[in-house]
Length: 131
Image 1 (cartoon, rainbow, N blue to C red):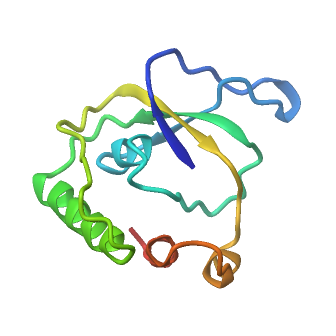
Image 2 (image 1 turned 135 degrees about the vertical axis):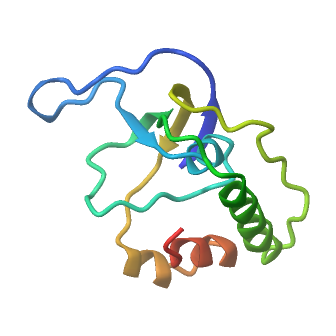
């Protein structure tokens, strides 16, 4: 997924499986990290039936500072695997609002992601965690 900040409005599902302006609600800090492009993949127990723009909405639960710090440290370590040390994290992790959108470019099973040699090591490690 590729992140894009912005406004706009979230839509809902259209009829018969047609999606117009689909929106995914996520807890913070993961929602902002995804929109900022820091979190590059998102795991779900169901296959994503869409490609293209997906709006990201932050749930109402206020994140604990320890969770935010842990996730920022996690992503610093993940990016360092590929030599990236300058990451701009969000200044704030707002709740109960639409944050922006990402571009869904594909949907892989976990075993497919783990065996795909074309992805950077950091993305592979990120995909193999429960975070």
